[in-house]
Image (cartoon, rainbow, N blue to C red):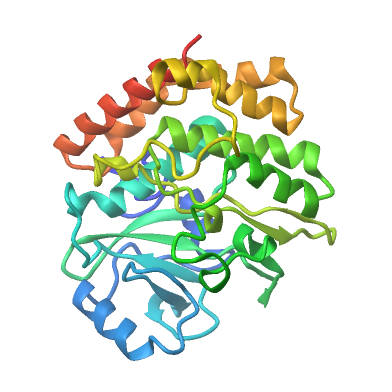
Length: 324
């Protein structure tokens, strides 16, 4: 038996389950599980296309297009984003970065019902693993309106300095959403779910640019599918527990006592968001209630054994923090 390189379910052949393959490729197209080039080619292509690429960030990610059953690098009209093992220095588990992001995205969607960008692992020609995600800012072949929360709040390096993505609170993130989203009562619950998820799975880089709105089929603006979900503390053990502070100025009694965020802090954030407290409590309880499903996906993932053990430990630690 093999594991689907997207959903991690058992299949009888190498690659993707039929359902995952259709999600990745779209109707009437086959999706390859192996690329025709290697990681060294990614770095070379990125250098050549640097002035034309629209994908930001320091990671060696490139845009791909599916052409006659093959994924090929492209400078425009890309359908997918490919992320190999980073070339930058990573303190711990560098080779596990693609599998880490893939696992976090699958846990979010499969276990906790968070809408995520379609994603999978994929192999280079030499067998090395990479992460791939299908772009969601296209509809019927056309680009749709999308803005991240930095753009929505007019924040940039020019206006806010180098830390402009981090010099804000999740309390402010909620205000940005309320200002720009007519469906705020529905979308704020999705926002809260992602914030708690990032905390429980030790994503210390869920900054302002990792939240975006895009135009729905009905012409209003709603949260995009989640993207860039990853347990960053697996690779950077000394980082902060959250990318942003929960509150503008508030320091809860719980935080004063513990010096880190716990369940009362997230309940207070939900209160600021105007959420139903009973529903909020049930959502937070999901993480402990679904622990077995999370552990099963961790074990089925493409992480190394040592990385799996480390992630389980971090997950248990955060579960204690949000427990009753």
